[in-house]
Length: 241
Image 1 (cartoon, rainbow, N blue to C red):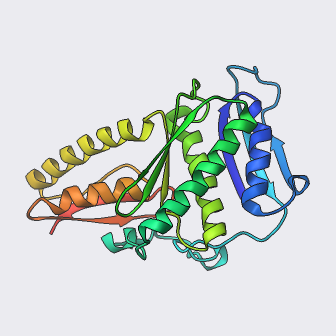
Image 2 (cartoon, one colour):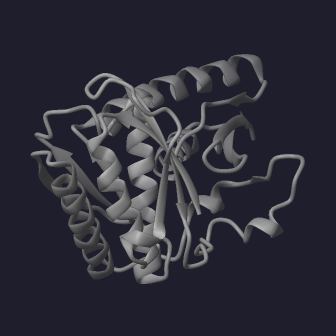
Image 3 (cartoon, one colour):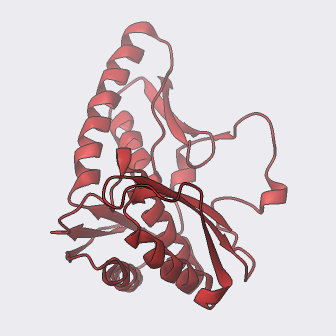
């Protein structure tokens, strides 16, 4: 398994080693981290880690088949149904949220960062937000580090519960602010499609954001939406119905 994570400060290196070892179910000695840009300033420099988990073999998610089975060439297209999954019970969501919170608490401890956790369980997913962290290290440039943390949590939960994870990770309300902007862009795209009759492709979004946009489009008569592409570049296409 390979992950690339860009963040600030060298304290993230030790935290990532522990986190990856936990989600991979192996000893930290079996996790190798290579720093491709060492020697940058401790506080302001960005460091990229290439994380190679020696064992065990990667877990295949429900969203994508094994790597060798992935077709090359044109992007995959399918409809709104790809955002739906087998529904989980409130008890299962609580269980996943608690496990994600434990994982994130360990990450904060490893990075020696302050912070509290807020857990919200909704109808179809749970949200775990880190607040009062006092640093943007867990958000990163344009949310890149947050997306990497989200992926670590997703892998850890999927490995533990053997089902698609339904927990979204946020830091200091970053996702809420981003979602507001995405909704504004989606509304602009809706107006454009209604006016021109031509389809519009939005920027890549995660599964939770895409679902919000699909619901928004469903409320507009004469329009439909579908998801297109592969993660992490999967996006919503809005078009006349």
